[in-house]
Length: 369
Ligand code: AHR
Image (cartoon, rainbow, N blue to C red; front, side, top):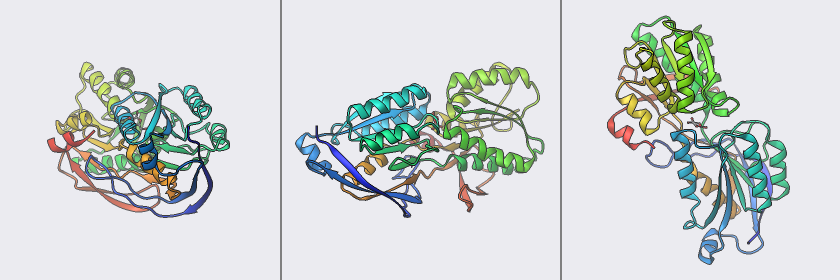
């Protein structure tokens, strides 16, 4: 197998901009820091050469699991981008939401001497030791989706600004409640897998607005980003908080699907002008269909099709180019009703931003992933 060595990584500053999202053209956003990687190969350097000669670039991908529609779309996107046809040999590991399994998968990739390692980290901490092992082995690591917060020993990250998703959801709720004349908000949150950066960012962002507005968050429990998890937490909420809540925030669409089943069984109505305002994240196709029907009031997109960005980073590294340290997906916010056209909030970078709200149509839901 051809051995590729990536060396000379420097941290520098750069700004990058791409455009991406919602199934339209390419999606992506800003970038603040970058690594400069000088790629060096013992044989040839270009992937075109590699594909033509049958010398595939080996990539190990340690995926979170298979917990949601979002995750399925993410897996499909990475597998399509790193296909054999495109010049890659992809080793895919579904880590089934188990951090130990994920670390083990990365160590196996090192043993197998792959050319690149891609990680979607289940949790945001506990990474420095194994990333040091990758670095010592000379294998560049690309992180997608969730962040690693206790090590910078990776070349590049591509994903969503989860804190902004939470801030946007909170701001939308504030403006929506004002527009509807609802002054008393009693909120239940079904969180995503605890310790994941998606859960941390969405929780912190939403809570920031809730604290500022003096809302009551009655409870906030882990639904593990699954439909079953969402249903179980909601069943227990319906018993413990019967008649006491009027907002449910689910940190992904699959949890919302489970929560809807639980509320239906408990005789609680949800959606536009019902007992409960229902907020969700991801905006997958099925999620947007529920927004279109008015069952979910607002859905904040998390864009999963990051495979092509990841493959692009590998190609840049292969050619010795400078790669962006961070690439943020640009994501729309979807709503059921045409009563607010935009929201304005201070984002995680401290900038005041005004973002449009998209009323879901059939075309929008069918265009989603
Ligand atoms: O990390 C992204 C989150 O993980 C998505 O919101 C969720 O659906 C997935 O399981």
